[in-house]
Image (cartoon, rainbow, N blue to C red):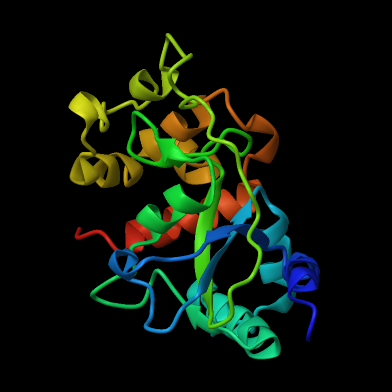
Amino acid sequence: MTDKDSVLQLLCAALRTEGLLLRGGFHPEPDDDAPPGTATLLLVGNAGPEMWYAFEKGRRRGTDRLNDWTRRVLSGVADRFGAAAIFPFDGPPYAPFFGWARQAEAVSESPIGMMIHPAYGLWHAWRGALAFRDKLAVPEFQPVPRSCDGCNDKPCRTACPVDAFRDGTYDVAACAAHLRTEAGADCMALGCRARRACPIGSDHIYAPAQARFHMRAFLRNQPP
């Protein structure tokens, strides 16, 4: 490809076929911890249920975890566009995705610790990044007020049945213990109740099967 301005359009189209989104990008400085020689860093992620539908359709039954599928799909896209793929689940040390995300799009930290997007709310994630040696045009975004500043009630703070998000921290053990009880069936079936209480981005809420998948994966990684 010789027209650098067309790369983003072609890349967005390639990602959409897999239910993924280009989540912005920037031109890293030396202290941004990007791979050596990176002139452009583009973030890739998901919002809403579209990635889940692509994952369900394209996963290898019985063996393909979401991380495996992500690596296979995004590595293929990276090869096609001459980039290097970076994943947040590799490590340690883990790539500084939250710091990169703040430079790439208008996200901020929510009262329950998750990064909130002004359109997607809490129903999004970053799945990887693409490092290019060429300096490409990157999507521009205008800084906006923090999404949670205008929310007086902060229902996300009070929706958790075991108050796992008190004092701005996350009590992982209390959350996991609750999920293992009958009372935690609602969160296991539909996703975190605190997350669902947020009024922002409700149009992008995960599909029930997707929510169950993530909740079960979370619980499997917690000590009994």
